[in-house]
Length: 92
Image (cartoon, rainbow, N blue to C red):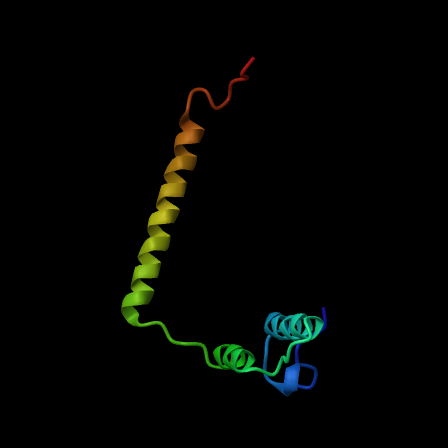
């Protein structure tokens, strides 16, 4: 994959290769549908990519807590599976 640089991204904007690909895909789909692609929706996508909204400290903490809980639950399940007396037996 080519390295994304402003010289080869959409309108020379500082986009990642994934963002540039998403923009080009959006344009491609609009063109195939015969619809205009330079729309307020595209402008909003670009604005979000260039200046993503900040999460409030409470939201970040909530997300971190949820991720920790999910990780702990997954780890407990994996540990229980390893300790299960049936985990190493054949079911024949």
